[in-house]
Length: 399
Image (cartoon, rainbow, N blue to C red; front, side):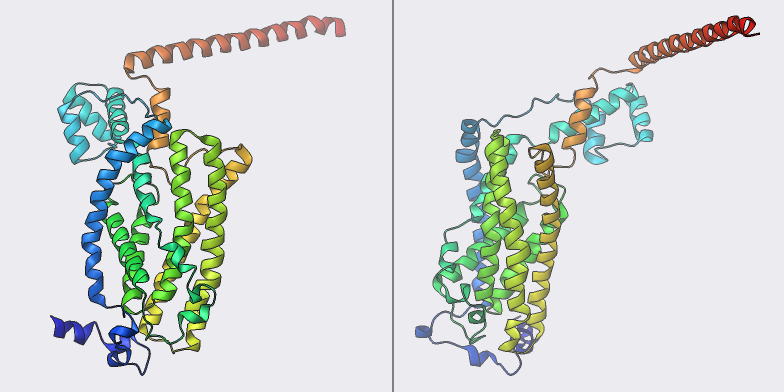
């Protein structure tokens, strides 16, 4: 296996600039740590440790904190226990077509309206509560860590060329090594939990983001793009913490504080993701790096992943700007543009339609509507006749 990896994966021309060899970048113990691929093996147990920590944190801290902050869950009508409908809901579809509704109605002896009402209540029953969303946000907030302040003390934070001076033989500080390991372990845990977390409209974009981030962190560590990689992670962490805090306050009902914090987050996000990242980091990886070495496959792969992240940032910036426009014109942030898909439609349906609607009530409403239309038509006819009589009475005088 090792020989196969060395032959196909760890070829020097893939990972190192032209003319460089693995023996050229070996370091002695007193020269510092050089990143090795085997170091990333620690990220998998760390990912499971993050998941366990998240489970404990949610139950011991996040749930009690949600109660203290006043997070309230909406009371939803529970669907009646109907085995045939429950089986269809779990095995076939959560939103049956009209023909399927007719078929289910015949099997259960229920009207089509009752079948549709049952499925609506059943979907709402599975929707996550505000407490669950609040706890999930609390756990995701762990992403902001104390290692970020170390980046401000590095020379490459102030000078882009320091990211590439002496590359690839650049020693990695112990703190930056663990910064990488912890960050990658955290994103692996997010990818493992994304299927059970609250699914939002940008679910696919989230999966792509997590995969691209994991590949980016892993590859940049193996290729010793650690210096510029720390800048990328710093740019991402600077705004994520504000977003998670704003969401927490939103579910707690602190509207004014949430709106103010959201405006701050929007400004930080737009500046860091649409100005700093492409204007400084991407420019450094695409242009400044070529002053120190020629392009090689690792150079193209690394920049491709960065461009994928930048495309996702543009997509999320569009959603954020939509929310900012609503805030400016409506005076408040109505909802999260990334909210779960069924939250709006089902809520409106549940409020507008009664639980026990049937065909008889529909017939009664239709009859009332017809009677109103008939009376309106009669009034119109009477008015026309009256106008016609007035005209006829005036004709002889006119003659």
